Length: 140
Image (cartoon, rainbow, N blue to C red; front, top):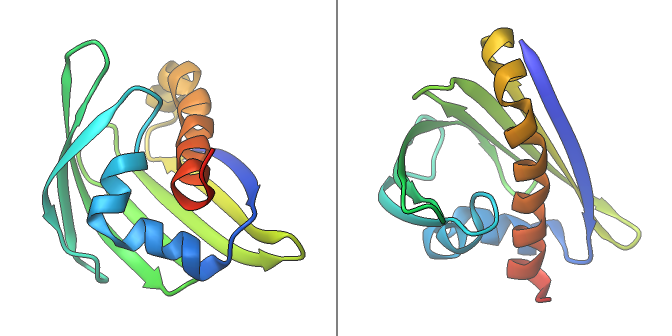
């Protein structure tokens, strides 16, 4: 596996950040890279629950995503298994810190060759996801 990891300090409690992940309306607002929007068709926020949605890109392309919530430990951890291609396991960990919450984002791809081919997209997209989460939780 090839793993891409990043983290961000967000001036909010783990509970506030977890709420932005667990609420489908809020999650749809910030999930994905800059310029993307989402339409969720299934959102079963529980261990083993299904998550199906379409990401609408700024290029007018639609990207179908099928995932499963592998683990949920409120308010500290959410693990998403992306079952459509490219297959990966995303672990989002939330740890209280002196200034808010350290959000750790670790995306482990099953296929190292595919991960290498899309690294130039994944790395900035993960940073944009955290930018958008920060705006959702604390504003600008």
